[in-house]
Length: 206
Image 1 (tube, rainbow, N blue to C red):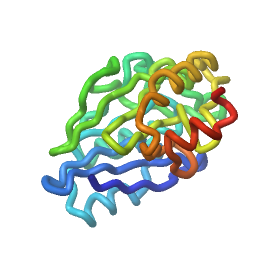
Image 2: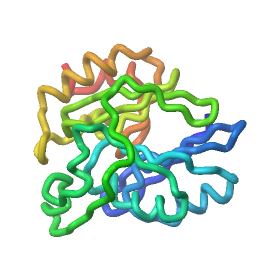
Image 3: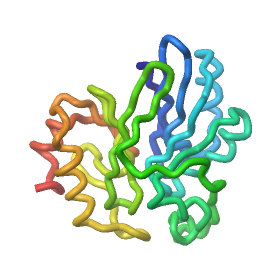
Image 4: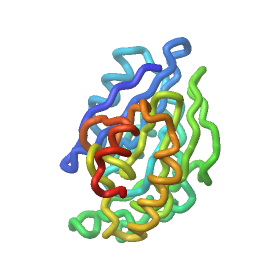
């Protein structure tokens, strides 16, 4: 697996490009803003974007969806619990910041439990509600893209539309902390961590 990520936009949201080394098939996860880095990386490494995957529907994770679709023609998927966030500034939080950021309706709605393939790579969709109703994480052995569910030493906020603190902790304990402790976690904001470190040191999950 090849993986690149970079903080994009005013909220410093981690956008991920994940690619199969053999086929050069790729997916873009959480394009929060139409940043040239995404297109430049795809071109530099000769990748073919086959999918845009959204870990949840907040403004800082969906702002670049329409732009990526315009040059890649890739479909975008989101969990059904966050489907309305794409087209509602009130739900996706942009209205709170005096903005009106929206994205097209999803090409496919996920439920959790699906397996997503990118070339020879496979990712399990884990439904991790709490930060939003339809938050998801993507797991492939050794690696977890966690969206805004789990951070290094912290967890996602729950004070925006659909947030639920108890559900968030439950998701982390029951669906993420069951993964191998050596699993590298790639959060939606901030540095990478591991499941083992968060099980031992994260003060928000006890």
